[in-house]
View 1 (cartoon, rainbow over the protein chains, first blue to last red):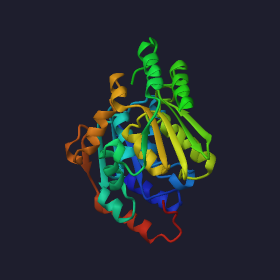
View 2 (view 1 turned 90 degrees about the horizontal axis):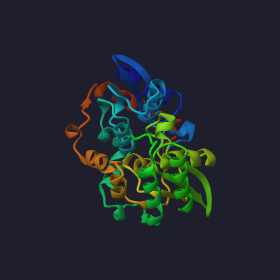
View 3 (view 1 turned 180 degrees about the horizontal axis):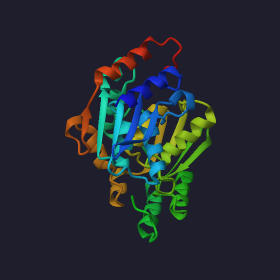
View 4 (view 1 turned 120 degrees about the vertical axis):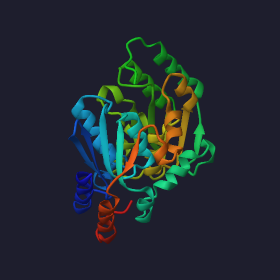
Length: 150
Length: 150
């Protein structure tokens, strides 16, 4: 966790983005690092955890973080939490909380609230369209014999 | 939306990943495309929406999708929903639903359920550690005068 916090500080000092860092550990060794690069990379998805997960997966040549532990300097936002669930590490350690993040104006709680809402009640409008046409591609997927399932 | 569905099919046919496509539209024009590349890129975050958002932001030289509309061939998973909220488009159109995704074994609903839970009740353990040390970096951020806020 010291390393994750150090990366958060590095991100702030270098104007990379918000004050967040993360590392991925496997077998007691740090295999990947990340810090927030949203504003410097013009990438709203470049949160510390996402960067660290992408680096770790590249290193492991896998889309899963089997037996890995993520250390992040702050409780993950919903996007990062989703990324963590898709990557499936075995455990996550976090330092600051979402309330701490909110106090410095990173309002993860707002997104947590929006995600829990019905799809028709959100602040960004979500509108259904062409479901029938899109379902044909799901059928292609189901019928496909050489697919990689994840 | 036809283009998003076409991209989903392209992803299936080329073994890129799951059957999902997305486009970002600004001023009536498609400015970026994406399809799922999780398994081919070994990147669990490479969902269609995330890929399209990253491409659109690169094109716009911005970490925000102001006045943009996202068309996605399936209701976004929590990770993509988080990414959408961080990118702040004005509207989202989606075709298939999370139930449709669940029927072909993409269990977004499981992650939706996990995200709504208290942090101590999740299937992946989340453990708090070194909050006090990490808060010093939040203080650095607050005190920083030349920061880019987002």
